[in-house]
Image 1 (spheres, one colour):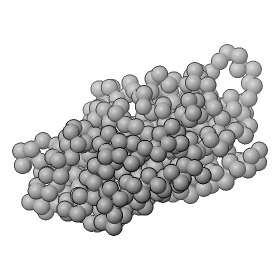
Image 2 (tube, helix red, strand yellow):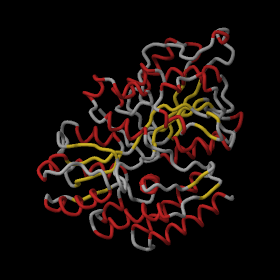
Image 3 (tube, helix red, strand yellow):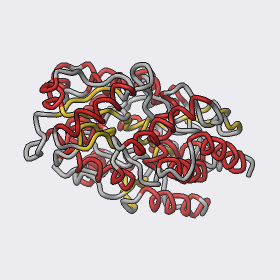
Image 4 (cartoon, helix red, strand yellow):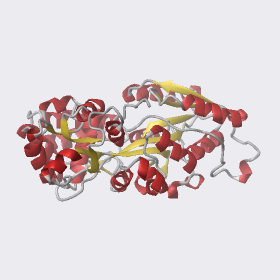
Length: 423
């Protein structure tokens, strides 16, 4: 199986198998075919390798609604740039359906690039509740969640078992074990994704949220980061680097670098997405059979993860919006969502799949992931999200490298985010 880079922006992939069609949500009055016809679906590149065949299956059974796949670059930044360039083209745009990162919804909706969708058309009540919030803007549904994600704390269960200690539930336990147990076993203590890129925004937001704080409110109109909770969250990470239980090399880690460090047996604890658990547990991994997963710790107990994943949106200039909605309803149906998990190892949005005994046997992290998703929250919502993320990355990285204290970093964040919000 070819593993996909699971960016902190969330998973920008479609990994499904279409073997038939159930017109989930289709209305009888649409049988005449109004708004139906061919579609173009845009998604990031580096797919699982079977998206082409699965769309061939859709096209065979829907000859009048054929889907053409357009694969954009692997880089989330480049995918975003190409999508927005196309969307700014208005009626000249090529794309009808977009597979967008969950944190792009507000930007695309505020710009008028994607159309609001009727909630009753899609099986939203069957989804894990928090994921629906990632697809809304200003109280309206602008996309349909397709793949979700939440951060987990991976740990070496063989090492903790040898020491006779449970997996950490609090920041204090994590710091103690990373500082004392890891060196005894020749390991680095703890890592996340601390290079200045979207992954650092995710890690910083999780630390702030876990401490009970927030970054923005009112769809980005209000800056809320200047708080004791934000200082505590950023201070926790900065202290880890200063004290050494977060190694300095972790300041260069993205998802894959951190996943390799853990999978190669160099880390005791790792914050990452569930794909890293699957990869580290696969045959050939140096830590296969030695990996455990728990929710991210917080100051006094389990913390708060940021929601990742991707959603499906219909562009305002879509040629055949009814066909677009029919395709989205199918892709979020239970049968296809099961394939998302079993064939793509991607976290589905359908709640029932997390309790399926056969799936839990194959993917033992599912109950933990469900718990993490249910307590997770979206990244800060803002029509200027890209600028917000750049500010968070730059300021928090300065705090981690010791160029600013956590207190001064939070005050700087408040100033710079206020400037972004008032553009």
